[in-house]
Image 1 (tube, helix red, strand yellow):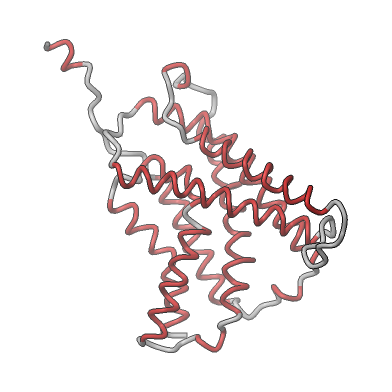
Image 2: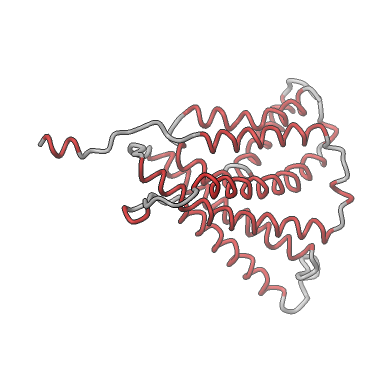
Amino acid sequence: MMHRIQQLPIPTKPNTIHGFIFDLAVFAGNIFFVLTILDQTENLPDRTIGWLLGLAVVTQMIGAILKSNPLKYRMGETAGGSSAGILRKFMDVLLFFHFILFSVISLMSMALLGIVDLVDRSASGDDIWVVISLIIAGILTYTVWRAGKQPDEASTKPIRFPFIQEALADGLLLISVTIITRFFWESWYLELEPSRGIGFSSRAIVLLVALSFLFVVFYLPSRYLFLVEDYRFLRTWARMWLAMLPIAWLVLIG
């Protein structure tokens, strides 16, 4: 009996430094976004935006591949305790959002590059590109899921220079989420530019709820590989929402 008790995993504090740095970088990026919201994003050529959205897909894919081994090794060394049911289900929902988000990004990238015409649906052969975008998103979401999957014993072997590899992975994932935030969140908010600085009102609350939904759709799926380590802890969720404060400030204060 004592031997069995000694073999039970002991919950330990999760490694949060990677998620903390990622949230801090996004927070800083959102401050920059607020300060430059009237810049020339809309003046960029369509092809440039198309290439950048394609880059968001590629960096997300490579970042997930590079992060997989260091993440699995770290998760294999520490026992995080049992997963809360509702939060575990929410993590699965985030994977679904991840698939939908990158399906849209892939298709938009191809449209802006002139590969597919989303306006003239009479063009022959365009439907195949829709299928291709779904396949790309499916492969990408599977890669992210596999990277964040609880490791088995064979996956916990140490690797050389894990910090360097994971730092590179985190940087690539940050590039991906920065592009997504810049060209989706900003484009949506520019449509509501007259709503800047409207103060505390029912309209502001509606806008903040809408922005919160966009935050969940655009940011949390991109943060999935950081969230798998610390999603069970309340402070993680509180800290993540700090990344949205610059946007809330823009709505309330202007």
